[in-house]
Length: 507
Ligand code: NAD
Image 1 (cartoon, rainbow, N blue to C red):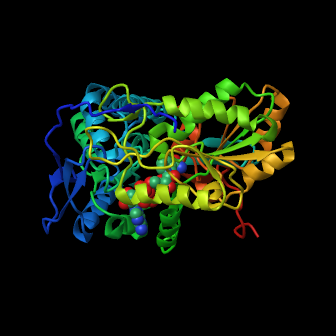
Image 2 (tube, rainbow, N blue to C red; image 1 turned 180 degrees about the vertical axis):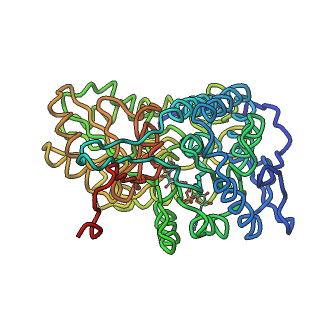
């Protein structure tokens, strides 16, 4: 059996559990009925936070506050320059509070501390990027409609945005949405995942400190039922921006259909990477290992589906297996750890069930395939796992495992590789490894995905749009498109000629 790299308990001092309340119309509030929920740390099984649990009353109040703050016109009427100043101030406060945000993010999500710090830095960068966009909101003019007419296309904030986020990148994902909504002039109701509420609440504190007016951002803590469902169906909400599972995304579309509000969806993925025989195998193996174990594999962009040419499959597998054993799994509070704890017991069981099912269907577990004991910690961890001999019909080849589990399929012809890559309900990201630019471009142009990485995996930039096709979602975040999501188009048609008949007057 291959020896894995396990980082034992760092015995770090743990903070007192955080106490979280809703932010409604600028005030921190408990729930009217006193309901609460707690979050245990996945790695240490200690209480990380205790949060107010919203019902219909709090959700209704938050939506009303966001509606009023939009309708009074002050926020959307504020010059973009001033909104940009505010967003930049939030970015500076995020930087100044990086350590405390990162620590609670680790305790609630199980992700490693060094990674969490990087995410908080990345989030601050998104607030700065959105600040720069706040000054660029503009439409177009049409001066070629004939001498009598002038056309103006205005871009306006869409209104009240409901923002619903998942547990895997709590602070980063809210920062892919909220600053862009605010830059556009929208107001918002935000619901973080019930597993990871704290860093969104800290963000609320920073927003107040930065001077964001009451009611512009409201935060409601709680579950999909009733909070998320109300946010998706209420007629006072103009759009829903959701990141999460495809199943819940479909429910949100159904809930939103009653009012035909706009829905932006960032959903799951079963992201393929195709490795051609001329690829740099060392670079590919390194990126594959990063792509599948990053954030414990609990990542929409997990590169969980490798499609490798038959001639190089064994050579690549040997490299991937050897690197997998070297990745430090263990206590997320240790600086050396690169892979931390699994989010919940239920999820750990789900990951294991996929692995066992694949084994029974004839696939081979090359490394891992079971839960991982970390000395000194009670929490739940899963071994780095590589499964070869996977066929396209197996669940592990088609469904999102959302764990540190790599499925390896093989191909012999280029067209077959592209067909296999597209053989999934998802279409979030895809990758290609080859030294031949024509091979890379042919793949990039034919694969069904929102993002294609060539000879790399999971790079991301504030400037580059991100999103999925097929059942991976609709709409885009980041880049200029990330701002456009929150803007509505209004057409103004001006008759500028005087004294001419419009229709019947001169007849
Ligand atoms: P989830 O769908 O279970 O929950 C996401 C959020 O939706 C949570 O806040 C939850 O409380 C809320 N919710 C649950 N039921 C709801 C309902 N009926 N109406 C409205 N809201 C409801 O997802 P998760 O388990 O937190 O996150 C993992 C999923 O997110 C994975 O499928 C992953 O691929 C996806 N994800 C996608 C991206 C992306 O950018 N494409 C990024 C990160 C995560």
